[in-house]
Image 1 (cartoon, rainbow, N blue to C red):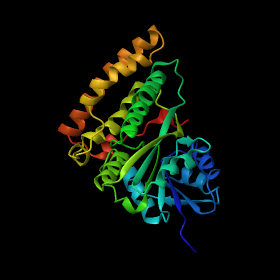
Image 2 (tube, rainbow, N blue to C red; image 1 turned 60 degrees about the vertical axis):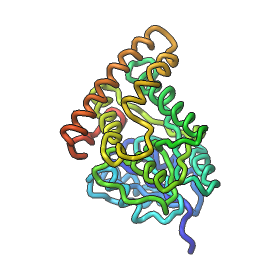
Image 3 (cartoon, one colour; image 1 turned 90 degrees about the vertical axis):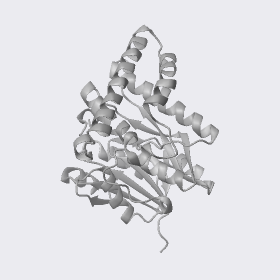
Length: 295
């Protein structure tokens, strides 16, 4: 029997309320030559995954997302691996769109497009729309059109399995580590805005800061900071971000929220500098669970 052409890796931790929706959205888009792995350390999430005969549940040791993905890599048999999370869900047709760029043999990875489902009429909800639409989406679109390097979104991306190396377990931004590794092998990283994944973002400032410190902090770690390929940094954000964000605002209230977002991003990057560059805190301390995205 030939191996599956596609392997889906869904990482989750204490997400029994959301992982069923995530799995169902994926299963409905797959053919018989695909396999789905749910990788989680906890029993409640594993029990939900066990309800689906198409899903193989792998129990990781709870040492973080990089370790969980490395376990998935050991079991995956597909030529293409798709990575996503247990607290998001993909749009119908998203997987097919994600795979199209692989028709080019020089493409090593493809990123999907995160779309915020948080309400725009709250400050933190508005921030999520600014950062996903005026920030990540525009930046990836521009870079893709120019043939420049870009970092995949960890919410939904696909890679050629043969190009993937084990992820260092202390990595905070495993999606960036994989993207940089593939670019270093002289393969292109692409972006497709038609492969959408729906994401609920934090609703408290504490959770927002916790989530952003661990993601932005990954770019300050040596494994990425020393790479010849770069996309994200405080300097780059300060140069292009404010104008895009202010242009995105529709009214006076959103302009005020945008100004507060600029202050919050400064707070974020200062924390990244202190906790990651100066204190060099380990992943176990920086990767804290964000509760308000799990409903």
